[in-house]
Length: 150
Image (cartoon, rainbow, N blue to C red; front, side, top):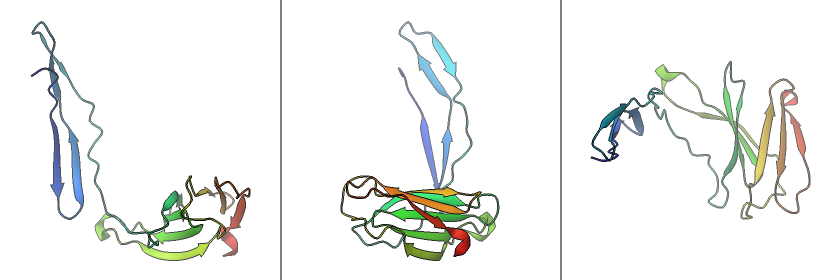
């Protein structure tokens, strides 16, 4: 029973899971037991998953939350330079049903098969602008996209 650690996972429904941390009991070499309470951070529930509708050669390289306080949107940037914006938060009572709001190529010059981070997005909530760049060797540019004009 030296260093025994109990870890339990409870799976509920389709792709939903609760993760609970339980107390540990350790026994040191001379047989004296001491008890540690693992700090409980609450359960972590997977609400849902959503495909980003990309070709097999590209992948998500950046994720930003837009309007986090009101009518949140999720924005994904991908290795092929495309941006997709999803209306994703319908509330726990309505389930997880993301809807694609818009999609566009912000950096079409990117090569999705290249190594590196791909496109990196930053959302400026105050100015309602996206800033995008890439670490690909031949891309030395920062693009600014004004969301208000769209």
